[in-house]
Length: 130
Length: 136
Image 1 (cartoon, helix red, strand yellow):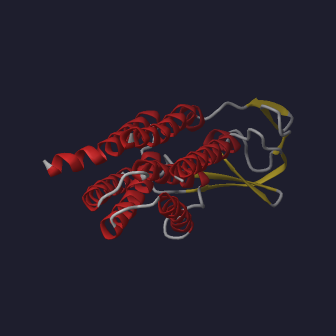
Image 2 (cartoon, helix red, strand yellow):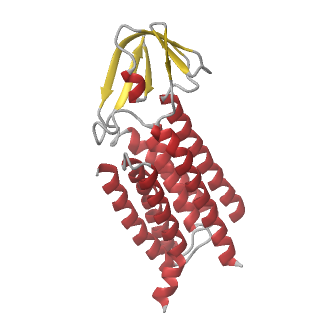
Image 3 (cartoon, helix red, strand yellow):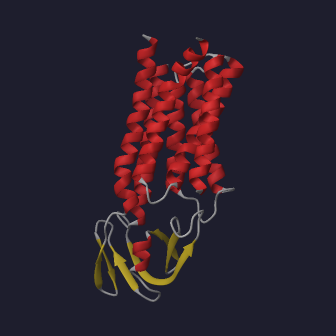
């Protein structure tokens, strides 16, 4: 039962890590298709402005949460377009290259370390029982 | 002697939590709130699991997983209500829930009322550190 529970904990942790990475990638528009005219660029403040500001692009009724760099690359009235697999955002016909955010790049290190610690703790408890 | 035994029981969990916190603070040196979310999730879950051990004396594996699921759900509810300052942030939710997973892995297979008290104390300290870094 303990080993099954351990596997369940690791599976939940891996799913959450994937969710976090996917959300961070989506903010850089990786794997996200957009097409439309920017009607509003909204900045909402969080706990520590401007470090954790939330940037929302309003595109013809659709709201997309993006990185600050993506929000800075467009203006209200611009027509933007990007396919799901493209790594460039076309703004008024001009290609703007997209790059992984600092959050995303560093998460590729931090989250595997956390997963490794979860696995290590489960193994430590198993060893202690022997 | 007994105190040494209790310290030994929680040492792996305390050590792993310290390494996780240091890793987050180093990796996200541009924003400590991610470390705050992870530590708060870890500390809150450790506190609940520690109190469960104090009251019941043991924490069966399904109970640990049940507390983990409840902690993740409670974290989602808090993130969607009290701490929904701008939006419901799936990244914050992921970090705090990963902290809860670390706590569950740290308590699974470890038991005893004394160890429970030590886990609860560790949880309270880690929770306080989480709040500090979330709003620092």
